[in-house]
Image (cartoon, rainbow, N blue to C red; front, side, top):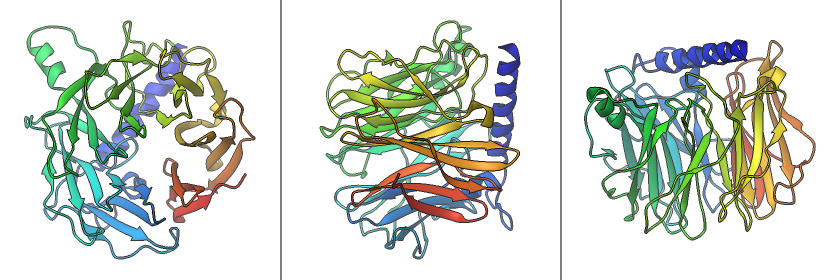
Length: 398
């Protein structure tokens, strides 16, 4: 177990160096870092148009495709003022399209202090032709950690942005009190991104460098899943629902009891289940069989089903992605070794109770970004960005 923890910590450290290197220069030309080049975000609007956001040369750029990703139109700069943008691995700009056609983007500015950042937001109300002046989402403006932002646009138009935040850790440190990890804060916009309400704390003691997973129900309830630091430094998962009324309640979502003094840089995936709650996919390093897990969370009793293992742990399987539409569920993840990198996927037609065969969708001798799912006009589509082929959008037909 000790050997495994050391391996994970070393892997996480190398990843963090890769991400930090992308922050050192906001003009990364003539050669952008490989982490920044690969770290794109994609989404699809109701008309089937594909939208992509990525960071280049200190700006977030948005483009769209009307032919399922074969060709993308002219890129539009979101932020007119160049800044250091956190992009790579677990952190990258986020993009979403509302039912009203508005395009929303959030991203993290990396500040001069180590690990410090601000969360920015911008919107376009004219179909991505131009973006309004961006602004910082949170009212707390000290130069500390506000990083690893996630964004969710619910069916009712509510926009929720969540991020990792160390204001409480620093306050505890100043008071000579113990504090593990970081906090998670969130802010909500109910006017289509014109403004956000003052941020609120969702939870203390989140893992410091794992991305946050978010999804939303048809009624507008937003669910958040993150790696949490439980007592004894057990880095399992917790989740909470953010609704229009009431205070979110933290519930434990995984029970691997993985004890590790360090962040594994490995965020989870989350999707709404049909009639029962949520699908969860995550990495668990506990025990003698570390690897990826898939489980179902009851949304009323808040009980998690026994997790099922998937992926090849010997090939470093990790970074899962989920898509759920009715009883159809799609799951994808990344695997890699000395032979190259693969994106592997499988599907369920009964709400995740049983799963079909694991199928290699993409193989590359170069680097692959984490997989992302899109639902495009009734078809599950896997989005994969690679160093040698660029962004590929692949219908999943197995």
